[in-house]
Each structure stands twice: as C-alpha cells, then as structure tokens.
Amino acid sequence: MRVATSASSSVTPNEVNSEPTCYCGLQSPILMAKTKKNAGRRFHGCAKFDSPSCCNFFMWVDPKIPNHVRDMIVDLLERNQTLSESSQSRGDGVEVSSLLAEIKTQKAKNRRLKVELAQVKKGKMLYQSAFILCMCYIAILVMYNVKVGGKFLSLP
Image (cartoon, rainbow, N blue to C red):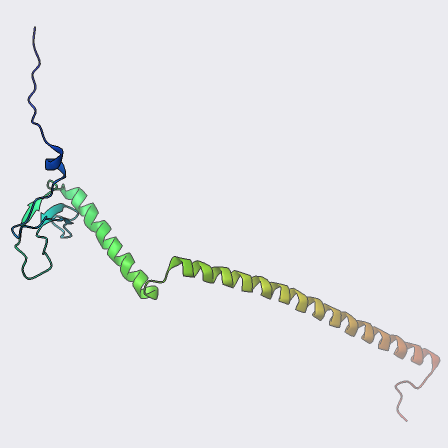
C-alpha cells in the first residue's frame, strides 16, 4: 500500500497582505508598467518614485507576460490614449450628462417648432382657400355681367 505525502509551507496572513518596504523605509506601492516590453505588469517601486530622492527600489509582482498578451495590452493602452485625446479635443472633458441635457432641450424645441409649423400651414391653407373663393366669386360676377350685357369691365 502506498501512502501519499505532500509538502506544504505555512504562510501567515500578515505575510500575504504585507507590502515590502523600499530602501527609504516606506511601504512600497504597487505600480503598473506602461512600457511596451512590460505593459500591464505590476511591480513594487519606491514610495517616492516621482521625486528626486527616489531610492530606485524595484521588485516585480507579476510574472513575465507572454508576448501575445503584452501586445494586446499595448494595443488597448494605445486605443485608450487615442480615445482620451479625441474626447479632450472634442470639448475638453464635456460631460455626457450635459450633452444629454442639451439633446433633451433640442428635442423640446423641435416639438414646439413642429407645432408652430403645423399652425402656419393651416393658416396658409385658409388664406389660399379664401383667395380661391374670391377669385371664383369675381369670375361668376364677370360671367353674369357678360351674359346680361352689363358694363362691369367695359371701358367708357
């Protein structure tokens, strides 16, 4: 009979959740690489990474990323940058909510203009009908005077 054996090591919760300290003695934050070679790969860096007193502490958190995954991440980062730049050139951070409010205002204005246009068309039709009735009345008067022998449109 065979007995299965296994080897394991114990890890305390503090070891899992603890962040390493940089050479400055500060907790090292997790940062993300944005270079093409290591795009998206996380690492620990010096807490003062953006200051002149940076100690240059560096330690990878993630294993090396396969090339095809790295290429996808680089592509997504470039697309994100392009979208960000196009939105800034479009209106310097115009909020979507303000655009939606503008659309709502324009739709209300459009509805009012449609109602006004319908009223104008109705008025135009009434004037046209009145003009046609007047012309018919004049034509009937002219024909009646011609038959009777009147001098409705005759010259002296």
